[in-house]
Length: 508
Image 1 (tube, rainbow, N blue to C red):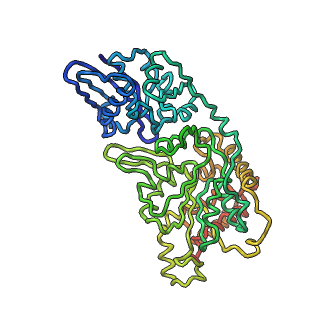
Image 2 (cartoon, one colour):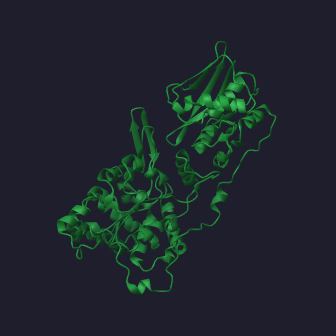
Image 3 (tube, rainbow, N blue to C red):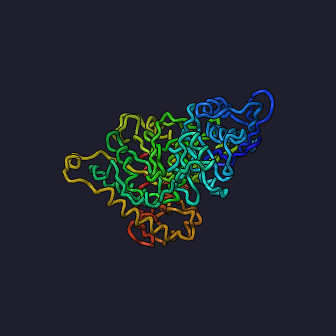
């Protein structure tokens, strides 16, 4: 007998349909899986056979052929266990149902017949909706994840017996439906707050500008001045995720298995802080089967690189294109996969090998230059704000009064973002000032003669690149938005120029 089950596989952060065709015929008992299965899929013969036996079913006798179509794409992972098992039951007549083509089915089987969670459940649920399926049968731990997709039924399955009884109509299983909008109504409760930071008002101002415009920032200062502490508090002043942003971020975390059990959505902006020993594949993504790297896991959030010069230069250089384009393409012999990577880069570094400012360091100018040279000029050009983090004076450290709270700063950031959204309402691609291109600068950032003269003088004196010129204008646009002004004036440009520390003569 023949049976067909609808399944799906994940490639990148998207799912594609897979038809599990099962044919049970005469001959010696043998199970053959075709359709480019990997080792995990081939091993499903033993998992499924034992799970069937322990669930009270009989394994089909005779020659059984299982085809995973399309046959020209490699199938990976254990998520085909459940659809293969149900296909075997339908082909052998142990389950009689007309619902196999109404649902997309996914799940890994334990030897006891229990259904274990899989990666990429949200992507598979979105694929089921795109195909017009009635719903998706998936592990109970993944049900909340799929329950945020409107228009389909997310049926939680705990074991193989439960799935077979549901398909035969002998058991009713309520679908999981979650209101995604309500998940964002709960107030954000952060473990850290800017109110805990003593002093460093100029750095807080810089981070507020970075958050308001989505700008990249580099914090430069001696050890112990609070660079890491300030960076880790940046997510507390960022605007909340929108539903579309949360869905896209959740898809990335889902395919990498980073979602907690029963977690439905990523509702907080990610903060990723990889160690400086991270490889190209760890930061960018890749491996034999391309998976998202740190820059994609930080999508719509913050990527914090502490001790920036300690990262391998080759690793840092791989970020240049994703910083510009907001996505990264991993190419392998079997094909290429594109992952989104619109993140804020926040980095921290010492000003010299011994951690002291250039005028105070005991290192020679050549040693300092070699240290700073570990970070290339093209990468620095892509960082909008170069922020000096000075040592905190004793009077600030001993002050009893707390600083301004993250909630107060976030309110100003959200107001500035709303101005940008109104300005870019006809350009959905533009989500913040940092995403503007050269053509957008001419349209949204006109400058008067005074501002142009100021920029001309700075460009000539400091020999800035064209990219640095654009970055200054973008930061000035954000400063004007924070001030509630539609026109960029010389004060805004002057403050933006002040955030190009590494372009000054003292650093070269």
